[in-house]
Image 1: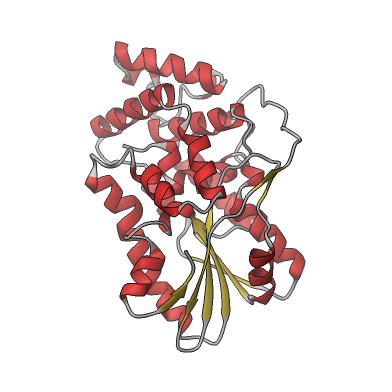
Image 2: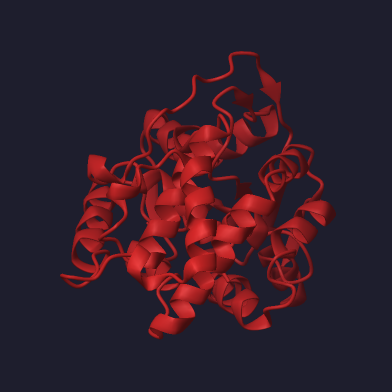
Length: 306
């Protein structure tokens, strides 16, 4: 099951999806709200043998008017010489995403998305199209995993949220303006896309239908997630991020636990280098007892923060 607001990888890629061919985009993007919304998200600091790392949780989709650049965050960004993200944030990555979609996102000739769905799933699909404002003809030749991501993007846009306002993209833009910074990434775009692509077609269709139902029935969760993040409420954030995967431990393991442990291994190597890092990953990867800060503490690192 791949639920939008609990899937950091999906959120990380939504902004890049908007750089894909125009046929993938939704119609009727609403105007941004102009009043300012203050936010005070959590920030951790990890001390290693030679290096130091700030850990900052990203919400990849935000209202374009949310202000999260607190003094503590700005100071940590200025002090860092190396910025680390889930995936590379440069223009080459956008081209890589588009190339991957073109090679892997299309159904075989003669097969349509709607033909793969039973009557009940088609009802859910029609509701998702209405919520997202994505023209159905744009998705008929798309693989279910890609169609769901596009529907997610469209739905997000209808909620007055913006991938351009996502924390990871803003951090990257700010780092570019600071000058003299280097950049690293934990994963490639292909690694993240592969998380959504079951090899079993029956399983993929089942996941697609579950995601369609969740889009219809859980319209408030994105706002709750953003609110918890903006108030540094790590306990609530952890609960929300794992709400929909509670009955699917295999999905939680693939999306969070396995990746968190792989990232911790990389961070340990970084902390053995004489650098100051600013690490920005999905907020769900930092919250809770299985989050990156907790895993680093368990390994004996000094971790300051909430």
